[in-house]
Amino acid sequence: MNFNYDLRWERLIKAAGEIGLEAILVSDPADSFYLTGAPEPMYPSGRTMLLINTDEKKGYMILPLLEVERMEDEIKVKNVDIIGYTPYEKGIDKLLNMLKDMGVKRLGVEEEHISDKMVSDIADKCKVEVKAAGFILKEMRAVKDDAEVKAIKRAIEITSKAITTVVEDIKEGSTEAEIAAELARRIFQEGARLAFDIIVASGPRGAYPHGIYSCKKVRKGEAVVVDVGARINGYCADTTRMILMGKVEEEIRDHVSYVEEAIDEAIKSIRDGVRGREVDEVAREVLRKRGIAQYFTHSLGHGVGIEVHEGPTLGPTSEDVLKEGMITTIEPGIYIKGRYGIRIEEMVLVTKRGCEVLTRGLSRVFDL
Image (cartoon, rainbow, N blue to C red; front, side, top):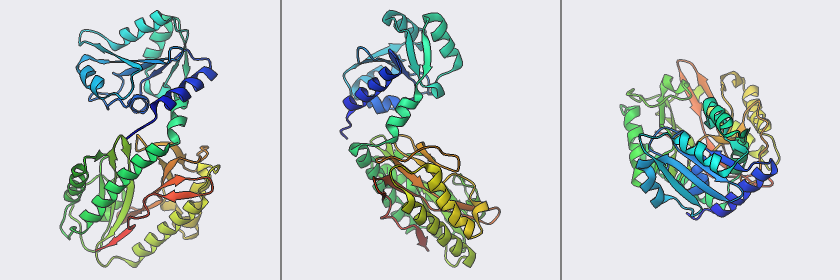
């Protein structure tokens, strides 16, 4: 996948300059990937740091020595030096020495991905003014370019194929775990990874919005929520579909149709310039008129990209403004404690005057 890293650096450095930053410390692995194609580290977040000198337009990746060779082989940009530290050293010490050598006086940090102690150490030991700058990369990543859209469409294609194929073989007595395992196997066969833990929640467990699969057996007459996404080329899919096992209560079918109505109305309201909370309200009003809005207990949607949850947010309090090129989910759900849950999730690409439904080719409801 040919991502335009040069353009991303140009935009980042320009934005940093506009708020007077001489350097930026990137500590979120997802942002490091966005800027360099760096592989996701196989250790806890926070042990890898990307220090960018905005004047030099050059980066320095500081990470454990055991990851250096892999990073050198897989990183996609040439303007980043790889600096490893041994088990006898601390990455923060490497960082502090580099900041001193550079003479940096104003440093931007990703405030949600750095400890207060590290900020204090940088400010005190390097006499650096530390400013919150996480919003820069958040805003950049929220709007996808053509290559990113292509990558996400491929992830959706893999996910849709897995769901369609696996659903055909589900029978009464299959466990949620067996269904999840088969979905994962199909995704892995395509060379992809899981974007998140698969949700397969049947019957009463469907009332758990995040009901990760269990050993429960699927029964006739139950509604089954399946939420799954592949990740390939660094980008995610996220889609939820309903499986109705044979003859289900009429109420369940009615509520499925109401959720679909909420999705369709929300999709009609999406366009460049509309606020996330306005789209959320459109869907919520449909369910309110149907008398079931009290069972819709979460926000309508979220952005999807390198991470399965990123900007923008579509919720009752969201101030995010949708922009052309954003990709977001539309996923109203209702959850009836002790009985069932219903959620259907589409992914859409915001356009100037509307949106493109990226998951349109996948059936929303499977009757078995």
